[in-house]
Each structure stands twice: as C-alpha cells, then as structure tokens.
Length: 181
Length: 181
Image 1 (cartoon, rainbow over the protein chains, first blue to last red):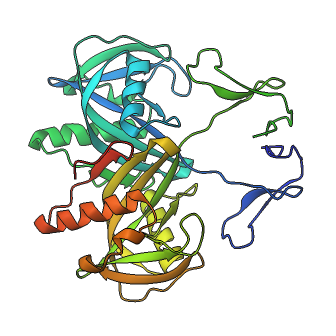
Image 2: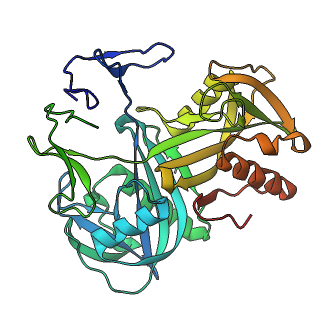
C-alpha cells in the first residue's frame, strides 16, 4: 500500500491509533485507518470409495505439486459454497455431503484454512485452468513427498488415521504448533 | 475505494479480469486487481457453572445490547488467540479450555463467525473500553429480547439445547438459511 485508497494521499504512516493496541496503516491527510485482516482459504477433501481426489498445481507457488482443491473464499458466499466452488473450478468435480473437517490457523501468514470432507457425486472430474491433472489416490498411492503445502500433508494424515476408526472429529489447530498426530 | 492503493490513480473500474469469473476493482493505470475477501469474527462463550458471561455493548452498532465477547481476527494470530484476546479486551476475563463450537457464514455481509466454548479461569471480569457492563447469566436470566445480533441468539440457543444432553457438536451453517434448531 503506497497511497490512501480513500483520498489518494501518499502520506501513509504505520502507527497505533488512539484507543487501539496494534500498529495500523493510517492516512495522515484524511485519517482513514486501513485495517488488514486474515484471509480464509477453504476447500474439500473429495472422497470416492477408498480414494481421495488430488490436483496437480498448474500455478505458482508449488507448480507441479499435489494439493486438495481449495482457494480464497469470496465475498457473499458461505464456507460450503466456497469449498464446493473451488472443487468445481480446480477439479471440475461436483461434491455433496460436505462435513467440516479441518479448521487450521496459519498464523504466520495470516490465513485460516477450512477443509470439508465431501463425497464425489460421480467419477466425472478433470483439470481446471489452475490444475495440470486430477487423480484419485488410494492411501498407498498418495505422493507424500510431492504435496504442495504442509497443511495438505497434515490434513491427509488426519484423514487416513481417522479412517482406521471411522470417526472424523473436527481438527482444530495452528500450523505453527506441531501436531500431536 | 476511490484511489488505487498501489499507484494512486483514480481510474478504478469494476470488471471481470481475464481468467477470472467475478467482478473486481481494477486500476486502469497499473492494472492492480484489488481483491476483497470475507472477514473473520471470532470470540468466546465463557462458561462458569450454569452461567454464561455476556457483555453490554458500549459501541455502535447495537449500543446497549448484549453480546458475546468477539471481534475481528487480526493478522498473525491463531483463532484461539484471537478469541481469548477479544474476551480479555471486552470483558477483562481470562478463559481456558477453548472448544470450537459455532462456525457460521454470514454470507450476506461477507463475514464468518467462529465461536469457542470456554471456561472462565475465575470470577474476575469487568467492562473493557467497548463494553458498558459484563455479567453472568443463568439460562432463565438471558435477555433474549436485548441481544445484539441474530448470531448471538442462535449461539445461545444451541448452547442451552446442547446442555440438556451434555453433547456440544460443532454447529456449522449460514445465517442466511434458517436453523433447524
């Protein structure tokens, strides 16, 4: 941020406003306080029998590595709508019976990550524009060394552990703190 | 947004960028796309024996009405840190054993609301700067007609229903869709 989006001034400073406790970007001309807040990333872990659907990324970061279909939540949609939309956009797959599964803070990068378990409606899926390839993997086929992000590794680890018992509690945590899993 | 925060231009237009599917605010001079995303509100339902702690708002909107301690999540913190911080700021109360309880989309206003059940550490609490009064309420004392927001009404309704069974599942939903509760 180089200019105030309200008045166009370049006189932006970082300071703690009166009555606040955190530094904010403040315009010295119009006094607008420019708050910055965490973003929500949401998506699905799409299931089909004993397999899960992963997407090979066609974009940076982590081009060519495997991930779950997920992305930034948009204004005016619910979490479930956003997760299903991302699954459609990245994997051209339709999901149903979304179940909240992972709620993880990524505090270092100011994101929260919300993943739903979901059932594929059928075997129709294909790579969207941000995806090189979509594929169903059994547990012993998961490309653990080629996963795009630590949160994907952790989500899949939870999933295959939980499948042993058939109980899928919501997993809550902060990726900055090591999992006990 | 009147000016581009990157280059200061007033030539902002709303259009669908190439490869995108939603209208965005785009600068016609430097081509910066100004994404806007939902905000996360998080807080606690602080419990003490058979009572819950509510705060009477000292700020607009809904000045003078009762709410749970909650507010906008900040960058660089986890959900639990944010919920405990808001409880401290608004009620000067310390909480422990946070349990994820309500994950609600407020799609119409582009927010998600994440509430934790939590135990008060002790009976030390008092009004913070945004609060007129803090008070413990038994179920039959809840000021149902003077609650600040529908989400607070719904959260407390879930809570007292769940207390009948002692089971407190995570409640997921969209405030735009009527609850079955």
